[in-house]
Length: 127
Ligand SMILES: [Zn+2]
Ligand SMILES: [Zn+2]
Image (cartoon, rainbow, N blue to C red; front, side, top):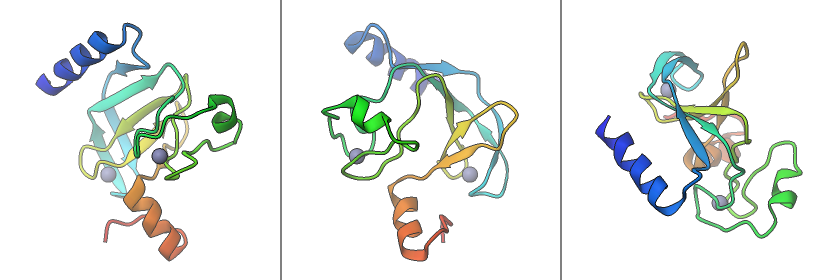
């Protein structure tokens, strides 16, 4: 896990209280792969997302962004992580899911998947 170590060091350098905390990887049902997959990158969101992880937009008002039921970046539509929730990435396809104990993982579609959804209505299939 050399990559993780590097990321962690970088985060500590620039920000003494990292906005996310690495948590144990696990096996999760990936709705995109339609199979159980290893999710070796999982984290707990600690602080609200202040800057879009997709397009880099600095949110002028976190309150306005997080007031919505499904908070999303006002510029690119990237779905934002909620503080106190866990997230993970599918090792196989790279899709991001919200991981809730005892519930189906919820997909947070990335830009490509959102584009597919707006074209085809609902599908986020890779093909
Ligand atoms: Zn997957
Ligand atoms: Zn954005």
